[in-house]
Length: 340
Image 1 (cartoon, rainbow, N blue to C red):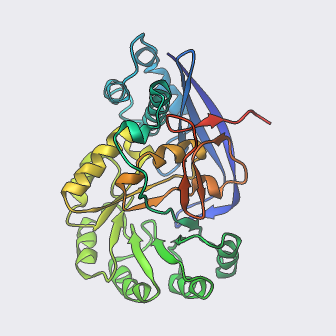
Image 2: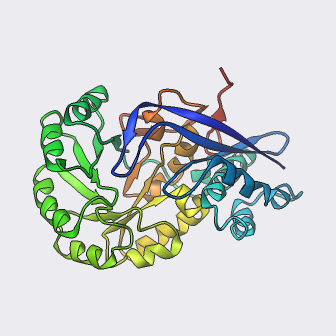
Image 3: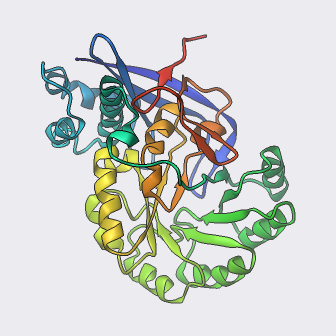
């Protein structure tokens, strides 16, 4: 099996702003595993908050090339177990490798990954479409550009957050989710939750700083809306830590190290009676197609990454007005587009 990497700059339709940063172009790393007949693809975008760059991800992958290219039948879980130690400090690279392994495995087995896991995609959650922070007028314009989605995630963390939601509500009856990306305080969150509930907001994602556990506990007790962890839930051990502080967890494949640990995190959250969401990190269709394999296990999903792009780099799963459509291609269904 041969390991190779590809790098791309993903141009966004609009500047994407959250409470801590803005992005116009998203660099991304694609891992390709080729067995001489099939190629499997996985993805991890760069991220300044988590210190992940194209360079350190590629260097990390070079350190496990010998393990990956060993002449043995592909078993994605076994490969993850063998590479997770050396890649412990670079979970984004581990994620891209793990996704590529599952995509290749499914193509070798002549079936979609979710079917090989024994899952049925007849009933799956709809994805939200994310509206990044901007002026109220621009956020309304962004909403109007993509009508008909059943759910919109609104990024907040500004001095006029409630004004934004009130104005957006004038233009759609769709469900809203709000994501403050650690931008609020305890009292602000509790106060906002009451007004947001009246505006048909489904839940609040990560309102407080990731390590404010006492604050999370206070919010959990008094919030009028469910609270979902994001920055507070990175790796497998964080699920148990979030219990008693959040109503649910948002699992990001890049942060936890791929599909293999994500499935264990989902099971752990279920055993604790918590809601489960999987989110994206503005990936192309490569990463979005990997997320789609988990859909039958989820309550909520944020897989609009490719829909935020001005130009994609792959074919695979598509998300049309929140509804996921699987391609007639095995594995995760990914094929890279030819360079133009």
